[in-house]
Image (cartoon, rainbow, N blue to C red):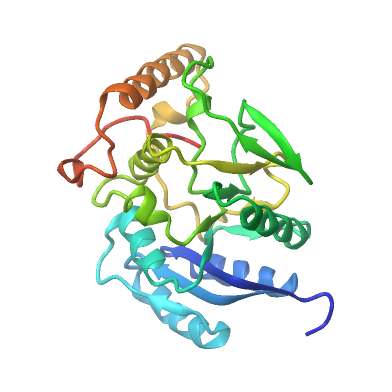
Length: 278
């Protein structure tokens, strides 16, 4: 092992995959190009089409990862749950297959590991987001602690959890519950976001939130997440109605609704919310 090689001891790489085997290969090649290696790599597939499954089998032999299959598509929640349950190490780096790390990632990931070992109270470290979290306290080397306070203004304060690339403790499901299954991916993420907050989860956040990972979707392998047009529109009226809706819903759910992940009675229920959009 050369000095430039990054071997991350006690860390497993968990990749969720669905019908984007070339994107998966691109992610794995990017990590090799950055001399990153892990104790374990798990690829959790969500019932991909036969051509992608064949490619996954080939890639599993080429890259030496554990492939966890599903007979049919069961959604994001089931895919993360079965993948996480296959992890054997203390820590998990979770990445969806359409992301690739930047050259800055390995050194900053080392810092994240140091911070997580030094702070047993921290549950996860986030490496990517669509916007800057509004309430941050500086730690070091570009990392900040996310400070959730229900009394602070705005609805973006709720976005402490995200299923974008992050490092977490592998007992995550024991502390915060399994991801909700049988519902849309946005609602799965929203449920975990609320469970994370209600169970006093703590997270660190890299303030340069697009500097460590890039999200890449091609014409041949576009995003498999299909969102309601109301979530994407920049129309002034729709955007402000959406903000008002989220502000009311998030506060109501946090105060009055039972934990959407921990409560068995809510498992598999349908929720037509606009999702979290973290």
